Amino acid sequence: MLMAAVTSLLLSSTPAAAQSMALDPQNRLHIGLSYVSGPSGLGVTGGFDSRLTRILALDIGGFASPIPISEEYEWAGGDDALTPEYRTLRHAIYATPGIRIPHAQPKTWAWDVFGRAGGGVLWTANLSPDAPVDTETRYNIRPDPAGVVGADALVRFGRFGVRASGKVWMFDVLQTTPAVNFFVVKPQWGVEALVQW
Image (tube, rainbow, N blue to C red):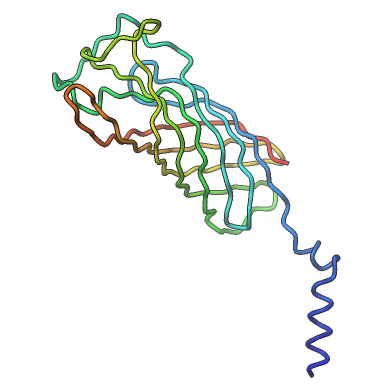
């Protein structure tokens, strides 16, 4: 009986057995459009998502808002210069590990849903009328470390598909005059085309 167990262990560790258990890489390149609230809310987004295990994947990407905020834009909200709504998302780079919801796949197409949480660097614009004006741009843009949580869902036919995502960015802002910190939470949405190999 011991000999049978040892033989079974040796056979399972052969290269052929290991190769049969190996996962396909499932690397995905995704590029599309993003949306955030505020002026110049439409942007571009993209990234690279790769499977680590059957349920874990890592997405590294970013977004940018190439459309400048008009110099004629005026804040239409409240008068409180410290309100977090003065901050609008402009650009970011991020890394978000994700957990795949296990499910049975159809034969002719595939779909997946991931819950994600991670972090990155987020560039925001201060739209406050009291904000210091940069010498070259209408609004001062600054980087901040940020946390991000969200989910994405994809549908794929063969190598190509579509991915929809929702993220919530969380970051701390230091207002210098007067000196006070406030915590900001901003949502972002995206729709992207993807290719998998």
